[in-house]
Amino acid sequence: MDRRRDAESDKGELAVAQTKRIDPGARNLNELSKPTERLHVAGAGDDYNEQEAEQTKAAISSVYDMIAATWNLGDLWNWGFHDAKLEAQVEEILPGFTSFGSDGFSELLYFHTLTQIPLGLDAYRDKRVLEVGCGIGAGLNFLSRVTGAAQLSGVDISKAAIARANGRYSRGEQLTYTVGDAENLPFEDGAFDVVVNVESSHSYPSLGRFFDEVARVLKPGGYLSLVDALTDHRADTFAKAMPGCPRLEWLAENDISPQVKAAVRKRMAPDSFVRRTFAQQRMSPVKRTIAQHGLLTALGAPFTGDASMSPVAKWSRKKTGLGVSDKAPVRSYRHYLATRVS
Image (cartoon, rainbow, N blue to C red; front, side, top):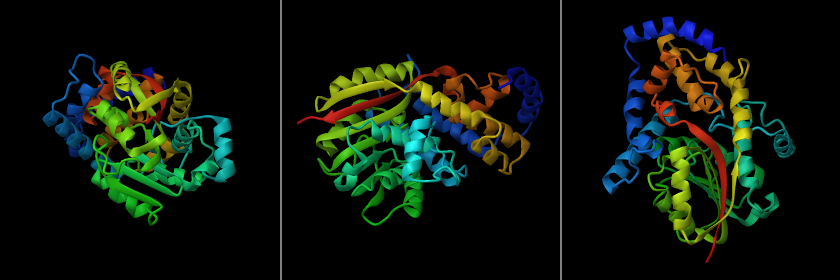
């Protein structure tokens, strides 16, 4: 991005924005995001009592309810992953998978997460797969298409996201979506062969409880494959929580930041699918200013160093509930693999 051009144009935008009424949704997102900042900002205190944890989960649920009810930017569910060889593999399975409503990067992050598990795609025919933090359900639907797994279940704390997922993707008993808490999963012990978690764990007040629940619902020998964006503080929280679950044996930890940054930068390009789709949305100039900076932040621009640091950009990030990116920037994007031991 041309930051000098950003700064010049932002002067006028900031003057206009400060004199007009802020979009109520943006104001609500700003308020709702405050309880979650402790998850990422060092020194803010991350020892949640039960009441604080429930308040944080309620705030997260409300944020994703709003997003699920209004999302209209196609199949865009995470920061993405770019790897030409991996894309070619998916293209062989699903020809033209990037041709309609998708740039393919979100799907590739799911495919990478799946293929780090030491199972061939054909092995899923008799397997049960759970996604914790499934959001609007498109990622798990994609996994159902590339694996043909016997049964896939998604769980998310957002009721609106689950309603949308069931409305668009559910298929009898093969693909289902359920409202639930990652720290108190609504499933029987040993119910699943594989658990995936894609860009969701950063919202959990207690990683330890999440790991314990994953271990509980996995069959012995089952796998957890997880990817997420981490601030320094959140990475430290991971490092402390991982040894606390004796039923999970950690097999691998890999930094996939280069592939994620490559996807983010492609989405920042002026002629990208995301930019073209966003340009077609109808909104006032003030709302567009706020939404554009918020969108770029949500898609990972601060992680790649491509986010504007102008006053209006910082103001817009704050108003859209993403001001934490200025307080505690994401330092790495990592993959973790574990297996359930007896």
